[in-house]
Length: 468
Image (cartoon, rainbow, N blue to C red):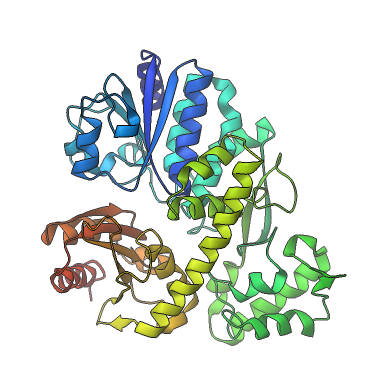
């Protein structure tokens, strides 16, 4: 991997101007920020372009003759793809480019690439797109280890810590770089989202992985869990967060949750997922969403999902004034949209087949949010979602090009042989679409009217992978 990164870094240094093309999610935004900062420090002019996916139209615009990036062109620019590109290698032929990615590669190509899959590592747990960009940045200049903080935010945003309740593989090397640079720290703590900023009862109400039986999705029950332990929910007029609790209070709540899990038959495996490694950005202010890697990643996702990835990009690059305020506003919009999306699915219902479950949100959920909603439903069991079945979610593409498809599954199914990346790539192609991703989460685009044929192919493949 270091050799690959050194090769790409050497190629980048031979160019005076580079266009970074990156994805709009947290991992992609972090990757783009790492790339742009590393290039600027190397005195290489840089522009950044965010894309939802590399479809033929987007790639053709990159091959165009107009050098004005406002019009989609890239003439005279060397292109650095981050957090995408590996699944579109055939389309990229003819472009002068390099790739830093972690998605499963398509057919072989001569494009210089940093990708964990090419060196026997996992792109789902060992290295993210931001991590791949970081390896290159570190080769451009060893002093770029301060950018490791963004690489870890990208990895956590990509849920790379979920399988083992901690980061593993190459991500750990990056984590150690960050600790040595003084920009990162880690701790063993509860793994739920919102430790720094969410009122304690809200953190418990929206808990998942593991869900809290009788508490998840129930505000009154979440309040009662804390109150019954004699733990104050407020300090004066302010709601307390998990970060405000002392060690004994944290231990009491954690023990209560474990007892609930065991008594409801979830077993020790689920209970062990409650506590894990959490990642702290040491230079960020305590009590802000930038202090905790998971909350930072959610802030970035809210920007990308609402078509404002450049706002999160500016925050990654250090803007803490107007840019951060705008990002916080988008985070509130994001949370409202997710609540509304979950409510919509509850109303329209989730349809179940023998091996999969699915719903079609139509225009009711933005295509950039439907996968997040599907994952939340799967994790919480709300809306009748069955955690033991892969979930397929449809939403009409905002650009009118077809139906966005998002697929999610729990890791127990992946351990049994499920690979949604292969399923999405194959099933979308069957109906004239395109797709890919990771084994536990993948997506794609299909023509409207092909849903039934697509679902039949998905179910056939899931059945074969799981040997049902």
